[in-house]
Length: 394
Image 1 (cartoon, rainbow, N blue to C red):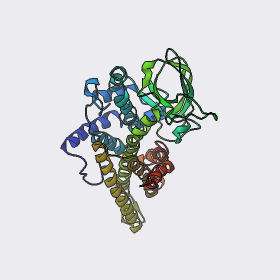
Image 2: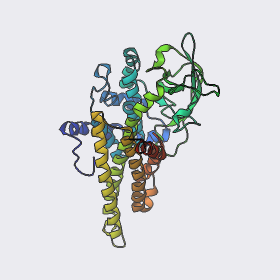
Image 3: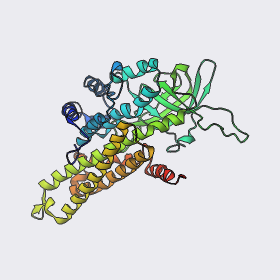
Image 4: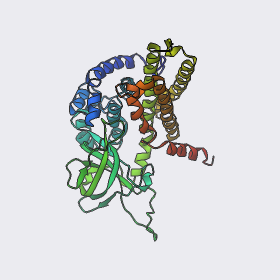
């Protein structure tokens, strides 16, 4: 829950919150640490989440989704996972509604939706999206994975890296360069020489690497994906050929707002844990909370998070209204994720030595949260998105 009663939610959302909280306490809290240690979320979780109708909240009801167009329901789930420090589970659940889902819903044919969304919403399959490459992280135009057309379909070659959930995904949306007519210097003349494809586990030539040994969010791992002459039939093209870059740009704001929302929810959770800690521990004959330095720090965190929450809530209303801009999503993403780093630094400090012990949620969140300023577009890229828009001729 936010630090203060939020005008973002109504009674229907709060009723939903109660059900989500019960689910999280039963199905997530007892297992989250085990999943992080194993670097794998047990498949039974997806089936349980499907039974609770938490998979595909924004997906078509006739395919097994929640049938809602209200992104605030996703926010409720994020709040409740942040409250218990379940970062890995949040990334995994959010990956369906905020990353993969929008592509399949907006761009997929009815046959593709029935083929892929239905088992995803049923918890029978998992998914991932593959954009990042070793030589093209935030620079998506630098993608070198290629898909070459043949008479029967496409041949995919290349590799992707840092793909969240990639080691166990049953289907992966892959952004690939589809070579066209080059100029004399070998440059592609088209503005958008990319196409999106769906690659399915088990396809010949498709290899899913082992999980990387990441610092945090170990339950939903990242890995390399390799494509060695993978044959893709025409029905595995997603969206419009040579519109792949545009398709990505159109959906990145939702991904970035999703990261931003979790960041502010996690900051609120960290503050709540810290407030409890300093109120119940003593040093030099008084509560830690009674030192003026502590009170000043708490006041700073409280104010910064409340102000940030107000901006993010506005972005949530905008995405529901269909008016969220790429620049506003970038503002939310870089500010909230950097704020989370500052909040956690102070909260760990107020915990003292206990803040460095993994048995305390503040320590686990401290390492889980570090990647937030990197994935989904680094802080520097977010500032570039904003700066370019500010300097456009009016």
